[in-house]
Amino acid sequence: MISHALPDWQHLADKALAGELLTRDEARAVLTAPDEALLDQLAAAYRVRRVAWGNRVRLHFLLNAQSGLCPEDCGYCSQSKISAAEIEKYPLLAQEKIMEAADRAAALKAGTMCMVISGRSPGATVFGKVLDAVKAVRAKHDLKICACLGLLNEEQVLRLKEAGVETVNHNLNTSANFTPEIVSTHTFEDRVQTVEAVKAAGMKTCSGGILGMGEGDDDVIDLALSLRELDVKSVPVNFLIPVPGTSFEGSNALDPRRCLRILCLYRFLLPTQEIRISGGREVHLRSMQVMGLYPANSIFIGDYLTTQGQTARDDLRMIEDAGFVLETPDGDAYTGDPLAGVPEQYPRAPLPLVEV
Image (cartoon, rainbow, N blue to C red; front, top):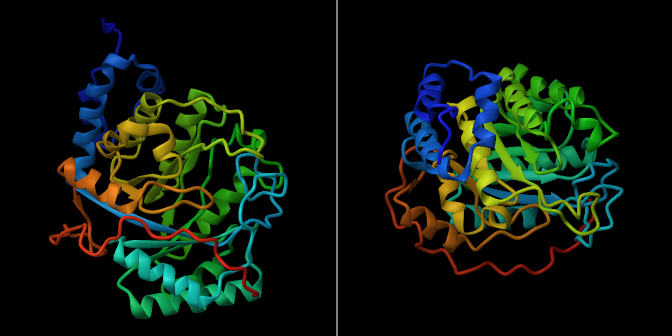
């Protein structure tokens, strides 16, 4: 039986839609509610989602354009210098391979291609080749480009903007308080400064976090509040995949209902932002993946950085079966057959090593 002490979830939706901030107790109650309250929470979060995003779902395609070889010591990451995970490691892909990935992104109906490179910050040679690749993709495809290149200054961000990048991603990853528990080679403020450089350049900001690393409820809340304070426009919510060989390989702090409650809370605290269910969607939401689209409005289609996602056709069927519609790069509803031209699964042969 649900306790009468629980909040009225529709009241929380009303507050979110009015631009009012939930109290700390209300936010905690979202995360600690019993399972029998979950459908009511999802219904309230969906009402907030529909005002800003209707019934549309945005698709992003992720390209790991440079893998491993990173000098950072992020404990969650299979590409960090302290990781013993068995992953592919390669320098920046040749432009030909990046263009092949862009072709796949377009074929999968993605509106945004997210180009990611490992490392603390790009060197001049790599940065120049990224700019060239962005220009080539933009010349061929109607794809928005999001670049995730590590720590950046305002001058670098402006050059990305000139090349045709619309969005720069740099995740805060967790709360300021919990950051020292997961990394020592950079600070929370280092990450904030990159997000602020993106804002100063007049570009769209993308920043989110990784949940399930042992953080407390207040850390989950504080991360969302930091993103709200920074007025971040796109928020990827990753659920930790405890990759063998990383510091968090034994972590097991998540289940589907916890993930859904986190997504509901983030919709209440970030009512107009694009909220994207990112890494760990298939692993932790499992058979309840589609329910995540009631608070969230975006997913990655295809694979992640070093882990595989479910097939694109399964994602597209999931969206269609639930009555959601794809969003075009222009923000309209996609009117064609979303499965047209999409193969059952793209081959996943190892990416070739190429010299920069």
